[in-house]
Length: 187
Image (cartoon, rainbow, N blue to C red; front, side, top):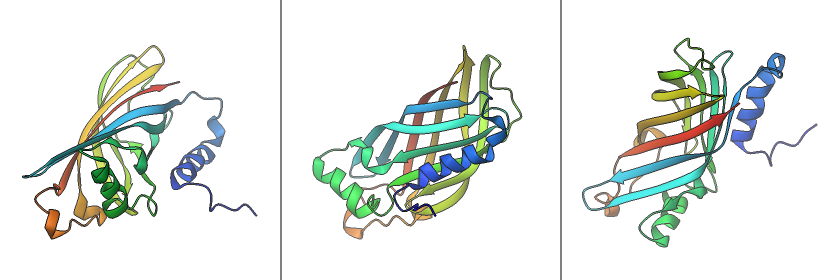
């Protein structure tokens, strides 16, 4: 029997995605190795921003399913190294919850292989800090020459993912985090 302890949650999601699609191995799918995800916490006393270019993902155009993952400890930026340390250790607990994932299905029935600009709604499970929430996230997709350009902006409420803000820093960390994604997916 295989030992799954060393396999990350996002890898299991991606493996499950492939397993469910076993009949379509020969079919084209879109894959992203390095997308960019940026977040901003705009609180009354402090603006905190960080980014990671390690967003990974897949889109299966046949049934419009998708799976994305980001390792929490890959975020860079912040106002200081101490702030990054607090982000990983105190708030996101990145050792305990190393990744955030989003997987599900595109609501619109569209053919992403056809060139054009599409506004889509992705419905799925957003898992951050070990808490899964069903979300619908609107995105723009431009399809051309065998690749997709994906952009998305949405918010994440810390409370919905059991991320606590101590009262001492309540004015320095926003309760609602703004997230922006830019990525290219190739066939």
